[in-house]
Amino acid sequence: MRKPNRAAAVVLAAIVALPIAVNALVGAASADTNSNEDRTDSEVYTEARADYWQARADYAARKAATKAKKEAGEDVTPAPQSPAEAVAALTVPEAAVAPAAPKVAAVPLAEGYPTNAQLAALRMCESTDRYWLNTGNGYYGAYQFSAVTWWWLGYSGYPHDAAPAVQDEAVRDLYDLMGWSPWPACSRYLGFR
Image 1 (cartoon, one colour):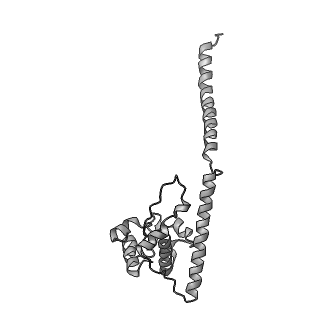
Image 2: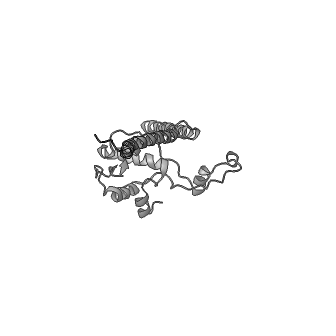
C-alpha cells in the first residue's frame, strides 16, 4: 500500500481551513465595525433628536393655535414684515453667541404666505395642476410632496389621495416652516426666491 504524500495532505488541509479562517476574521472585524457604527447613545445624537422632537412639538402647537383661530373666525394671515424685520427675527442676539462661534448670517425669507397665483404657478410647474398625480417617483400630488414630508407635517395617507384644499393647506404649512426651499427648481424658475 502506498503512503500518502505529507506535503499534499498539508496543502489540502490549508485549502480546507483557509475559508473558515477568513470567515472568522471577517466576522470578527465586522462585529467590531458594527459596534462602532451605533452611535445613538452619543450626546450629539441625543441633542439632535431632542431638537427634532422639540421642533415638531412647536410646529404642532402653532398648527393647533392657527386651527383654533380659523374656527373662531379670526384672521390667521401673519402681518407683513419688512425685510429688515425678517432679518432681525433671524439674527441671533450677541449675548447668545459664544465668543469663539462665528456670526450667523441671516437669510431673509419671502414675506407672508404664498398667494393663490403663486400656488397655481407652482402646481403647474410641479404637476401641471394635477392633484391626483402619482408617477411612481416618490413624490405625490399637485405640489409633489414626498410621503415622509407629508407625514412629518402631520397628515395621514398619501398626498395624491388628499383633497385639493388639504394639499393647499399642507403647502402653506410647509412654506411657513421652510419658505420656497422644498421646491428649489420650480421656485427658481418662477422667480419666487
